[in-house]
Image (cartoon, rainbow over all chains, first blue to last red; front, side, top):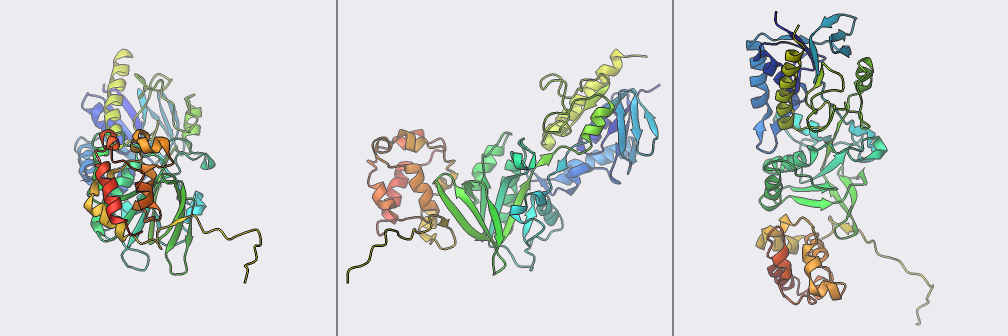
Length: 338
Length: 111
């Protein structure tokens, strides 16, 4: 009889793990809280650093899941996890030989940084909003006009103890560069300014894209965090920052402010962790057994992790980790042959 | 009439105001030397600068200010540069910083 593995979360990590397991003769079952599979990537337009449409990655995953008849339970949340199965909201018990947690992350709520006026003034949007605007094919200001000056602010809800998010969200730097280029392609006449604390270009091709943004797209980079955004009488937004490289305060009016919202830990990580005696890291993400050889293993036998449930990760990292998680699960199942 | 000294004055705002700065010269400089935009502000040029080690001259700061449209005093500052070119040898982005020093002087001679 096939051995059964419950995967909590039907985003990229969960789907890729399920496919890895299925191809090795294991029966995966995906439980997804949302009514649709696909996770956060579903709402993304294009992916860094190659501008690959997100659907080019997601559609084949979803298609394979359907073709191989992998069971997906959507619209149902998981309340407790254990190495021998999970309990769903409502009390239903799903037995399994192992469990993979691929529950991902939560986007930082930009309204918590009230000084930037998200949800208060027009034309202050988040990086996720901008992706949706690009998906809809129309990026415009609230009055329907085209922006002439755009500021992109990095590290909103990252590296910020004031909102209890002391970690780096890793992918926003390169997303800021990617979106700056996309905006510049849409509005060649507009000036685009990126306000950053550090530029962390950790991946292959990222530094090259950063350089291209500077040299070929004439995108300005100002080292300094915007301290506040305020509405002007003419409907524009005034921002203030320190240009730390010249040691002088700097201000300017802009038409659009894009906030690079970070990745934060899911609120229910603590409850799920408590149900199975797992560890939560100080930043709220799940703690792996160790960061080197045990990245996809929890401290408990039979419970595994894949993707951004343990830390902010790019889609590339997530897919690589899903393959690793499938490996680790198969290894565990072989060791615990019935 | 002798002016009365009250013992205090009014300070001008120190902020760089991108809205009121005239960026034409800055844009001209960037058009002639687009590689300047790839500056990552590492400070290698200032660290290797002989003039900067002996005076207040800070090349990184001057060219960053010029890019923001702050030209006042830039020409005079650049006169401290001896055009030795060491900054160009160390720039990790390969910017022709020596050429930039001359370009700033050429463009901003009337400021």
